[in-house]
Image (cartoon, rainbow, N blue to C red):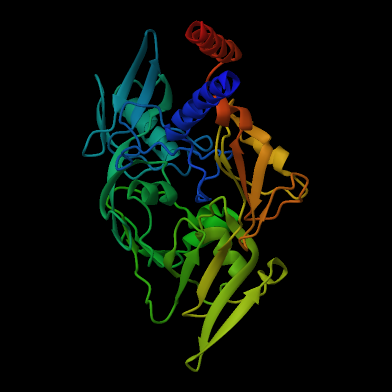
Length: 410
């Protein structure tokens, strides 16, 4: 009877600790979403106020050296002027709002609308003719001016944008928060300072880097981006992309061209097989397009483009970093558990189960995994019984029970 009593006390202690551990909060072992794989790094875009591209007193970033024959002078440009005679006179001069340059002891000379080369000649001749005929004159462009330009139409934030004289169309569009989804990016009209109108296909710059399709601007010029017609030249993009919705296509635009310039892929996007839903005579046709056919497949008005999801593998349970991970052919459960940082102290890689897409469950750790599989690492048997107790705590508890028993039977 005494032995039975002792065994009953010991079993009660272990069961009590195990019960307490099961009542504690556990890691969520449910099958979760694969929308944000843990092992992928997402670039964090720092959002700044791009309504003003440049600052008046800040250095302007340039793609190349300024061409003196092409750069047009205007109010706000700053020049460095050196007049060498018996004594040297060196000073900075700025083009005034009226387009003049004031040269001390010489006078005013107007250079607005002249190229940098022509402005240099005009200033030199003015100095020679009006003050110092034998002086050596050197002129350098020190700072680029800023001014406002207006952009209207199919843009997210139409209005005035402050730019520098070297900024191109892409920066103006960025400063206005980007195109409206229905913008005809290939049919932009620019009204120039002299009143002429210029047509620009911005998609040529996007696809080929052609700078003629990404021009610079002068004061008072206007950028007009027309809206496309949803009923005549649009497609609908949906699925695993970051920018689903309507988009305007060029005439005879191919699927490859559209993908290269329009879609924002996310980590689960699968381009191996794109589904096109097309209505012909009010009858829907489902077309599956493989990558080999992207170049030749011409989009039609009203096409619906579906980008499928490329499933990964989910690791849940008692691991360091539960979540979704990219699929790697041939990887076993242990490989994905390692990617998740390994098991926690209360988890066991010897107690895992694999849940497949069809709902079947396997405990075979050597099973070749497939896309969409979920690995669940379960709690170890020792932790289930003893909880967070150490070996010393367990031994101490047993000795305490035994001493209590000895005292009771004396």
